[in-house]
Length: 290
Image (cartoon, rainbow, N blue to C red; front, side, top):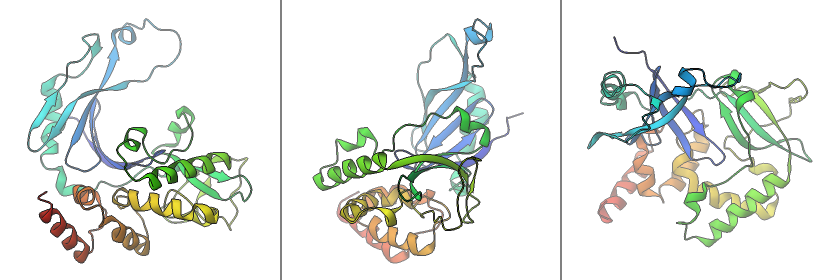
């Protein structure tokens, strides 16, 4: 009998790179940012863990990269350390790979990372930027929080827009310098957030932004930088769940200028693009021969 699988999505934050679709079982999982190309990971233990040759600290099971999968090429596996205890190829195929063939009809999966870690502005004590999220409250004490980042380091090099590079640097510097502390909150899908920290009170006047940055409390000098970053991120931001329609429509207008990236992510958008914008994207891709 195959293992039971969970289907869900989470946000990948600091830096924000969109939502990650996850199919998870007891000993393996598949992750994808676009619903087409999947990274396969296997849960494993070292022989030291199995034989309990460790100290008294609790060491949770961890995941290693097992391979990749897409509809065109199927499963490609990677060589693994023989000292790791990983599931057999047949069990991964039966429990997980067979499900990938049909899961596209269910995309996008529900977004379940309802616990959010917000950086608060030092002077105004208003939420400034979303730093992290979690699916379960029990995960929070074990999460390591770093500085807020705007764009993954590996993606900064290919960006030819020097204005955007400057925007990234300016925003990162401002948000990290004006960080007055962080607070974990529970987000109940649009209702007011509740603080999970007894020492941090969120008053009724606190307004959390729709997007991961609170543009309303940024200085005027950084508004253009914020706009440039949001325009660049728009194909990824459209994968967020529970966005107001007005915000989603604004993002669609921006995303049409990133035709290839937007088209690649269509299956992970909670709501379909406006038909007029989708038509423009299809025309541009045809002209470019993509």
